[in-house]
Length: 616
Image (cartoon, rainbow, N blue to C red; front, side, top):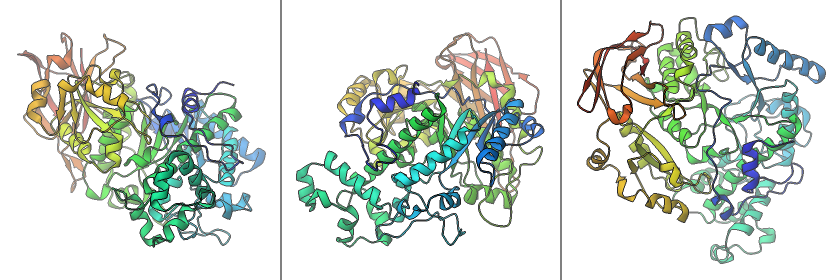
């Protein structure tokens, strides 16, 4: 049985753990992760896909134009043949409606069933520095006298439970598989974890392989045969109360703190790689795999490059009552890594707020932003909002179905399209891990100024993407906003564009290398996002237009009227014959345009939230 391309890459790079039952963590040395990885793509998750949160009726699927069930939940309380029958029926009903099916394996929501099936559950629970069990902070309930224990993804017993779930999920014959929730073991560091016996043993072996003996002697590590990092920290006065902040502080204040975080990050990646390989063996074929994580910080990309896409609940800051800017950085970085992101909001932070405050207009901005940047936003239909009595967030007819129908009607202008840009923005993984925030600031400012750009990644041990000369092809300027300490191979690639490198925020130099390509006159707050197909020179250029004028008191957009968009010839790359404006819920409109010196100027009569300019 052949392995998927992602699994083969991980095997080549030596990132797989040992067997589920062995309890031996085999992690890569630093040198092993310096190998080059080819660019990944996610053809099974299309830019025009409309993902529904859970199985539903054909009529509801049609209302939104659904093409994918994102959360194919395990049928409630079913077991054995009944489970297979009910789960297969869900998938069959979706397929009959023309909807693909992603079955779901639970990392957190399955804690009750884990208690039911594993008599030795306490051997696999995440532990704090002081040995206390770690529980999910968003599950306050108890079950059979137990709280909501968090399982350690380094523990063989917990991994067996996850694989058992996967085997059950595969009985539905899904198109894809999701292992859901952000709570892999590295996420416990903020809660003084994880120092269970499996993590203690695994880190001991990691230190033996990856840390020089001289360094260990300097920090007071003696006999490695009995080395216990938790005991080592407790002896230095570290407690559960202080461990989270002290372990994540930069520059490190605790001995071996950076090594411990790196161990947990690589162990999580090795876990998901091993899980994928075993799932594909059970399935007898390559099967796209997804997982969930908030994708805010470097630690959140632990599943790259193993998974095929991300299905995530992420912070949208609904309480700010404004269009969030943080997702833009996430989408740009995902593009640079060849990944797709299918998003929704955090239940207890975002979805419950828009439910209570009745803000469907704000939700519409989340949807439009995701698709305009080339990613996907889950249909907000009957969304869980955390524990409590208020119920779910329910999208009513007319709230957002027009946006999803617009996506489906214009799939040909979404699928296959990528950012068109001559400006690059360097994401240096090591610098970002060291708390340098310049790349985030540059991303916001380039976006605000309507400067088309794409990210390029210089990776490291945490993000195994090696920057190559080919990654810089087509760029006339590379913006660098922070340190450029990278591996020699990546330094060689950066040296090839030394004469066109811009130290942020030197806008004068940037505009001298790449003169303005997009301007908007007659209004403010409009973002223009040019996208093109590199595989089809005859395909139209498209520019997504996003209106940033959200009115929080009205929960509506302030419609922009009678403004002009100017596009430079260097961006167009063609003789223009016509421009159409496509907007949700409205008829396509032929726009007036005129050639000007070095480009064209287009009249836009109105823009409510989001539109696509089709330029031929």
